[in-house]
Amino acid sequence: MLTPNSQAKQLILLSGKGGTGKTSLSAAFAHLSQKSGHPIPAIFVDADVDAANLGLVLQPDGAQQHEFWGGSIAEIDPENCIGCGRCEEVCRYDAALPTDEKHTLYEIDPLACDGCAACVYACPQDAINMTRQQEGLWFHSHAKYGDIFHAELFPGKENSGKLVTTIKQQARLAAEDNAIPLLIIDGPPGIGCPVISASAGADLALIVTEPSKAGIHDLKRIFETLRHFRIPALICINKADIYPQGVQEILRYADEQQSEVIAEIPFDASITHAMVQGQPVTVYAPHSPASRVIHDLWSTVVQRLNQTED
Image (cartoon, rainbow, N blue to C red; front, side, top):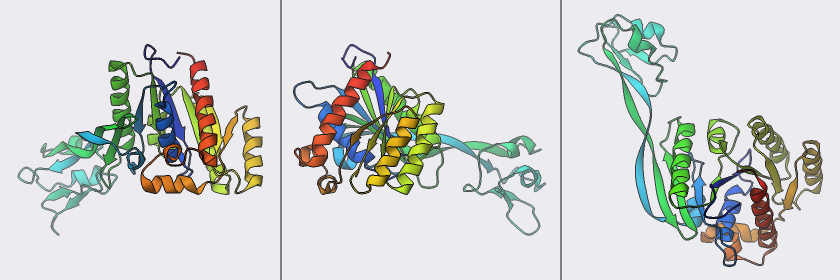
């Protein structure tokens, strides 16, 4: 049950592709979780560390900034390098390069280095060392509807899955310390490492899709990914009235997979207007067609979370 005395449940919103309205829905859930009547204390995680934007709507402040140190890259000490070329021979990423035409000295291209350390073991002079790299920042901020954990991966860095794991762990620890019963995770697009890291330990996934060819294609990909990790998934169709044939295809697919479409949100310009104003749509236009459906959707999601096993 979603009570302060229970272990925090994890709800993750995924889409497979970007632009389906997942972040707008996450922000609306943040607002609805705190509405008077039956508020549910929650902590929010923006797991899209490559392009975090949940904060644009929740507008957090008082951010606590922390460094994220990820992988390591090789560095050659020029005073000990004898130009033997062993590093160039073993490097599969073409990161070990001679600095002159006579190959008397080598250096490592930091952009090409994959951090495998093969050159370190191959160097007869012990002239190569692995150096840890700061690959981003993560933040613990305070928003109107609860604390939010988010991050920024530096351009060109690739440890997004590890950074997602870091902020999820921090959010879970904060939930335990403060008896918060719910984590709402705005997941990243795609089906790769960041999605897997964000989904780990989730009690329920809500797939936000749209009735388009790309939306349906990526719905199937993310559904299969969640099935592989045995995470129960429900489906929500956004902009459901723009392509009725696509909606029918999604309904057939959900029936085949023994899943359920629990909401069909109509196209509503108030969602875009709310985003521009930096507000959840349920705050900006509480009686709009989309907001009314989202209210019912939130109630259904809470009910299903209460039915999941602890």
